[in-house]
Each structure stands twice: as structure tokens, then as C-alpha cells.
Length: 143
Length: 209
Image (tube, rainbow over all chains, first blue to last red; front, side, top):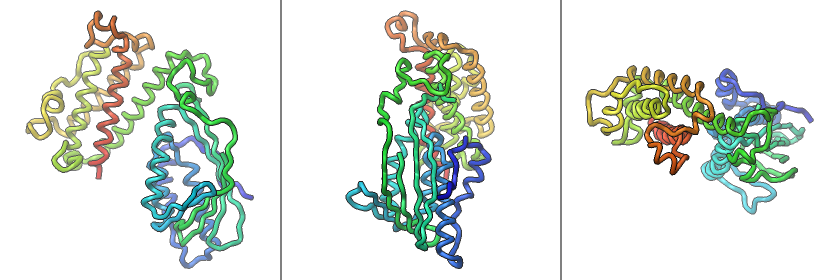
């Protein structure tokens, strides 16, 4: 198990500007699928960890646009049916993010995220473990 | 909360994502945790010495400043041609919205007892008349200068204000009416103008591209 990213750092303008270019999808058609999928997984995890929901939800939507295919299919253990198609997933994602953004910016909700890669041996498939910590820390009192 | 995610990649794009092993520890956050009721705010980060009143002010000013920064970023990056774009066909132009916001913020100065207005002439162009009804409205550069001047003046004034100042009546309400409703105070002006700014900022984003 390899830790790919530490906890969120305080965002800076420089980081925000460079981050804009950090998740430009590359063309790995001539590279080994195993390596390329892990490279992309690292880039995706890194982008998600450094995005700051209290600043804007657009960052997350940009990540989604950059990394996910038009025919994306998303499912989970708890969902009855998978969600298919980028438009539907984007809509769900937005519905999820908007209240989070408001609570983080105005209501003092604090969210920290860690991402850890899990080794796998199937080319084109990656696994990651995520941990998020949620707390209420009013903006006027947070350090 | 912890989870695991399986992703299948097709080149540089995720085509399948499956979440599993989701677990949640600790209690759920409720609306009470995020309430702005200062009496019930949990203590975070070691600023316990700060009074509840200061928390209100700090929060209000933080949100105000965040919206001002966003507005600066949005309008500040527009060219003289771009500010003449309409936010939607037949609707207000970006320059009008910017001038309108400037005029409304300018009017906050006397409302909050900070100073006389800096640009009362903006009302005719950007408040009392609709967009495109007059040819002699301030230029892009004049609006930009006025916006910066007005908000700098407000910022300086806010720094001088204590919490008790924010609780005082604003200048548009009489002492008699204020006695009946003490919520008509200066802090209410800050909150309502922040909402006003957010509303028009959302419109302006539509005209950005």
C-alpha cells in the first residue's frame, strides 16, 4: 500500500493555477495499459485531494469533465442500479456538491480527504481507498 | 467515512467506477452543528476567547469579502468589449451589472454611517434607469475605478466598526422604528447587500463567455 497524497494543503493561488493544468488527460495509447491507468489514477486522486470544496464546486466538476468518459457507469454496494452516462452522473454530482459547498463556505463545515492507492494486477483497473473526515468548525473560529 | 473505489480506465478516461466497503464512524452532523446560532457553535481551533458577537461579525465579513473577491476576479478579467456583453439576449449588460453593484455599495457608506457617497451620480445610470435607456453612462474604466474606490472605502470602514457598531440602527430607519424592530441594524445591511451581490454575480457569470 502506498500513500499517494497527504492531507489537504491550504490552497494557494499558485497551486490553484498550476492545478488547472495538472489534470490534463494524457494520451497513453502507445504505453502499457497497466502503467498508464495507474498514472491516471494518481493524477485523479491528487486532483480530488487538492480541490477545495469551500472555495468552489467548479473544481470538482472540472475534474469530472477531465477524467470521466461520456459513457461512464457508476455504481456502489448501496445503490440499487448503476448510473449511466456523463450527464446523469454530472447532475447527481452537482446535486451532491452544491449543499456541501454552501455548508463549507458559510456554515463552517470542514472536510478533509486522504487517498491511498491499493495495488492491483489487472491492466486498466485501479483501486483506491478513501477517507474523509467531516467536522463542524465555524468559519469565524477556525484556525 | 471510508470507502474503496474500483475504476476501469479506457485510455485516459474512467469508464466504470464502483464504490464498496463504505463505512462511517462517529455521529452524523446535523443542522444544529452548522447553525449560525452563536450560542450553540462548537469551539474549534482555540479561539475560545473570541466572543459570540465577534463570531457573527467575522462570519458576515468573511462571506462579504469572499463575494467581493469573486466579483473582482470576474469583472476584473473582462476587456472593454467583453463588459458590453448581455448576460442573456435582451437583458442587462455586464457593465450595467457592475455599475449597479457599485452604486448599491456606494449607498452603503452613508447607510452604515461611514462616509458620504463617493459616486451618487451612478444612481441615474445604474439604478433608477434600466440598461440601454441612456447613452451617457460611465465608461468601463470609470466603473472599474469607482468599484475599487467604493469597496476600499467600505473595507476601511468595516475595520473601524466594532460589534456594537453593527448592532446600531442604519441611517435609513428612524429611532422610533428601530425601537420597534432592532433587526433593522447595520449588520442586516451587510447581509442583505451580500445576498444582492451574490444574486447579480450569478447573473454575471452567464455573460462571461
